Length: 69
Image (cartoon, rainbow, N blue to C red; front, side, top):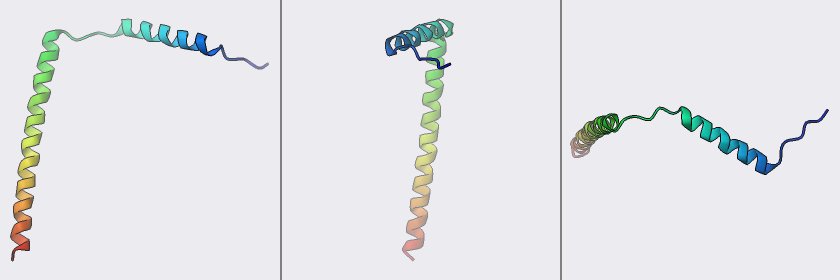
């Protein structure tokens, strides 16, 4: 026996029903937690940026040192 798929509108409606059901299961963070995580991410991005900048300056200096001999 061949099973037929429901029409496109039924599948779209089922999709949005499933999305709504899943969104009800989500545990949203508190504003305090969001602020703390945001600050943590910004600090790490700043630290990584400084490290990358430092390495770039170091490698640029080394390349100039070796190429100018």
